[in-house]
Length: 120
Image 1 (cartoon, helix red, strand yellow):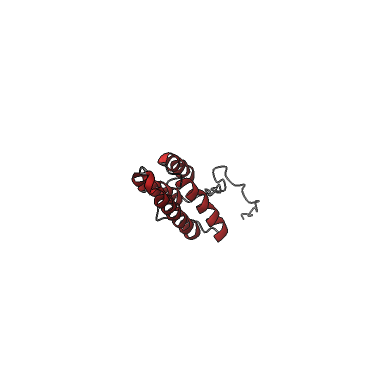
Image 2: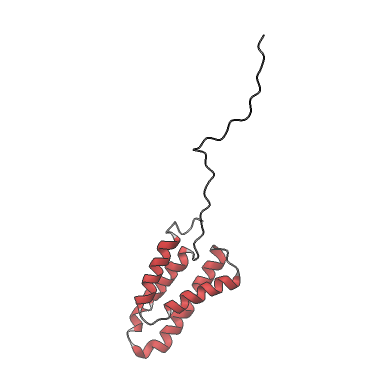
């Protein structure tokens, strides 16, 4: 006759560590990409100082709207947070030289991590 023995549960194996939570970047990568694209889009007309009263506000508004929509819809930020983030990037894009927007945009893009734009 065989007598069964009841054992306590085995401890978890060291390789089965709990998954590490990824920290979410402050800016969505598409927001940084919008800053770079719009800032470089308005680069050529900015060389004419006469056009600055037109190109600077258009650049500001383009980045403000694009970043607000990306941060609101894609990142899921609240309206106020999305607007403040959009306001910061739009102010950077409104500087009439591409020297500020492109390095800042590339730094934000590298910090946020470049992933596939259509996958979460």
